[in-house]
Amino acid sequence: MKTFFTADCHFGHYNIIRFCERPFKNLNHMHGTLISNWNKKVKPEDTVYHVGDFSFGWSRKYESRLNGKIIHIRGNHDWSNGTKSRMKYAVMDIFGLMVYVTHVPPVIDQERTVEYDLVHICDFILCAHVHNLWKHKFIGDKPAINIGVDVWGFEPVSLPSLFKYLKQIGR
Image 1 (tube, one colour):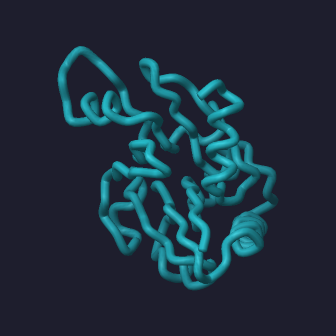
Image 2 (cartoon, helix red, strand yellow; image 1 turned 30 degrees about the vertical axis):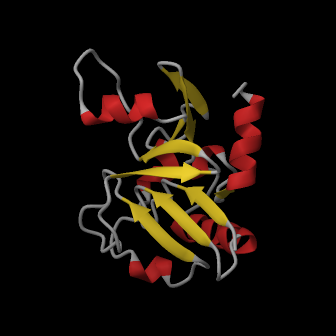
Image 3 (cartoon, one colour; image 1 turned 120 degrees about the vertical axis):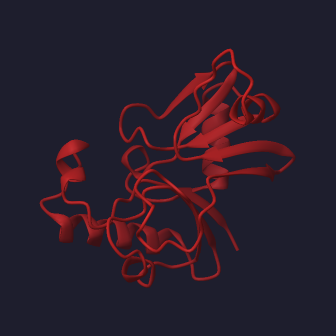
């Protein structure tokens, strides 16, 4: 059993193709590619954390075509699409490292907020929302990795791949 992370599939969102310059002719082409890429990597017994913006419209019609157990963390477009979970964020212990998982990259300011505290206790951040703007950046001294499909070949990314990428960026 493997664990994967992904985000920003935007199933059913025609304009995302243009907004993010995705290499798809139309929604059917995008859906077919996303579903095929997902199912090539993810087996039925695997777990996938989808970190926001799963779909426009009813999510179950897309979930039923995807392998694995999907755990949703809510994105800004997930308010009424029927996703199974309404978690806003998660803090996970992954191989002894504390990881803050959230859709929108955190903004750290002078005010002490829950988000401020979470960023400071965690070793790194997994986020999305920014599509193809960046694959990683540092928020304070913490690496933030964008796990959105736009920067990971339109497929979920595995834990070993994330840890390999962390090493590449010097963590």
